[in-house]
Image (cartoon, rainbow, N blue to C red):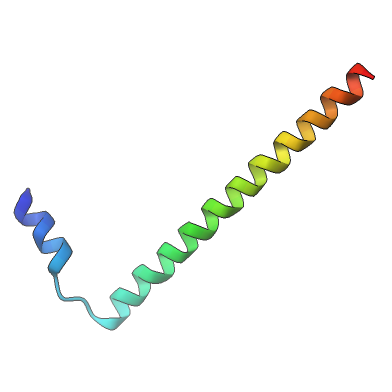
Length: 55
């Protein structure tokens, strides 16, 4: 298992493979940002709905 991890970390990659990993990591990071923003907006909307029902 340790050998497989070592091979994964230090294996030679082509420029295309490395670029693909970079692009996928950037997309994942953007997805996290979008999810955090959507969660905040949903919480804001829910709080506004609660205030309307009470008032």
